[in-house]
Image (cartoon, rainbow, N blue to C red; front, side, top):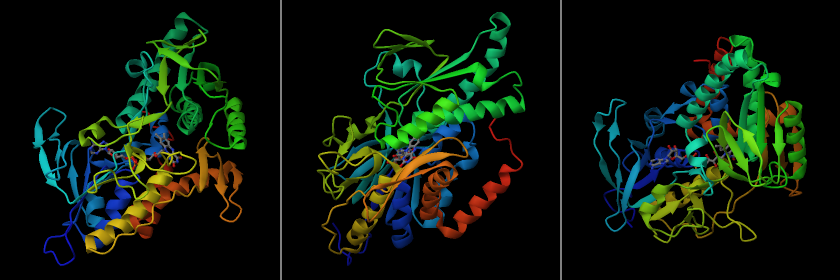
Length: 438
Ligand SMILES: Cc1cc2nc3c(=O)[nH]c(=O)nc-3n(C[C@H](O)[C@H](O)[C@H](O)COP(=O)(O)OP(=O)(O)OC[C@H]3O[C@@H](n4cnc5c(N)ncnc54)[C@H](O)[C@@H]3O)c2cc1C
C-alpha cells in the first residue's frame, strides 16, 4: 500500500454502481478526485433497485428515472468505466472489463484492463431459483431494468390478449403467479392491481382488474413478509385481501411450466405470467475472484468488510458480513448505504496513508417499510432509545418509504439537485399518464 508521500494516488476501483457502490464512489470522488476513484458498471444508467417493481408494473417510467453515470461522475469527481467485470487477476491487481457493444453487435469500446490498489466489489445479487424445475426458463425475475421492462411488456400483451380470449371464453382471466411473499412480491402485487385500473382508464376499457385479473402469491413460509414483525404482515395481508390478491402460505413451488405453476402439495395454478421473487444469491461473476463464499454465493467478509484478500473489500448484496446471532447483515439498500459510509471512512484513511479504523461495521436496523401502492405503505421504525419498532401505516409510511430513495439521491446529487429533481418529477406527473403504456 502506498503512503501519503507517494507521488501516485492509491487507486480505488469500485465495481457496481448500485445503492452502495455509487454512494461510495460519490463520497470518495468528492474528496480524492478521478485519478484515485474509478467506478465500473455494466450499464450506462444508474437505477435505484427498490423501484423495479414500479417499473415492472409500469407506474414508473424507468427511462426517466435513470441517472447517467457519466453525469454523476462529473458531478462527484470520479472516473466512470462502462462495461461488465469479466475477470480479476489478484496477483497483478488488475481487472478486465468487457467491451461495449452497440445493439447491432458492433464493438464501440474494446475490452479494457484496469489496475487497482484496492478493489471494492458492489455488484449486488441475482435471483435464486433454488434449483426449482422450469423456474429459470419460464419465470420472470426483477433483478435488472431489462427484466422489469420485459415483465411490463408481457403484462400489457397479456391484457390485450385477454380481450381476444374473451370472444371464445367469457370467463377467461389473466392469471399471474408471484412466487415469494417478501417485500418485492407483496409490493409488486399491489402495484399491478393499481396499474390495471389505470390501464383500463386509458385504453383497455374492457379490462377490470378485480374481474379480469387473478394474482396469486405463493409463499413457502407460514406468513407473508416473514422477515418483518407480525403486525406488518397482518396489515399487508389485509391490503392484499382488500384488492383481491390470493395468498397461499406454507406452499412450496415444485415446478414452473409455460402456462402454470405446480406446487409440492400437487396443485396446479394457471399462470399466464410467473414472477419469481423468492430469494437472492451472489452474482456468478464473483467466482472470478476465487475467494471464499457463503452457501448462496455471496463473498465472505469480516466486520471490516474485507475478504480474505486484503486488497479486495465487498459491500451490499454481494457480501456476507457478520451481524448478530450468527446471522449475516440482510441484503437491503439500508445496509448497502451504511456500508458505503463505513468504507468511505476506511478508504479515506487508506488513501491518505493514515491508520485505518480497526472497529468493525455494525448494521443498525432503522426499521422496514413496505410500499402498498402509490398512496399507502406499512412498516416499523426502530426507536433509538426503546430499541422497539414503532408501527406506521398509510400515507405516512408511503412517504417514509419514498424518503429512503431521496436520501440516496442526496448522497449522490446533494441537497439542491435532489430537491430540484423531486420538484421536476412532481410537475412532470401532471402531464403524463400514470402508467407507461407504450
Ligand atoms: C423490487 C425490489 C424492492 C426492494 N425494496 C427494498 C426496500 O424497500 N428497502 C431496502 O432496504 N431494500 C430493498 N430492496 C433491496 C435493495 O434493492 C438491495 O438490497 C440493494 O439495491 C443492494 O445494493 P447493492 O449496491 O449491493 O447492489 P445493487 O443496488 O443491486 O447494484 C449493483 C450494481 O452492480 C452492477 N453490476 C452487476 N454486475 C456487474 C458486473 N459484472 N460488472 C459491473 N457492474 C455490475 C449493476 O448494474 C448495478 O448497478 C429491494 C429490491 C428489489 C428488487
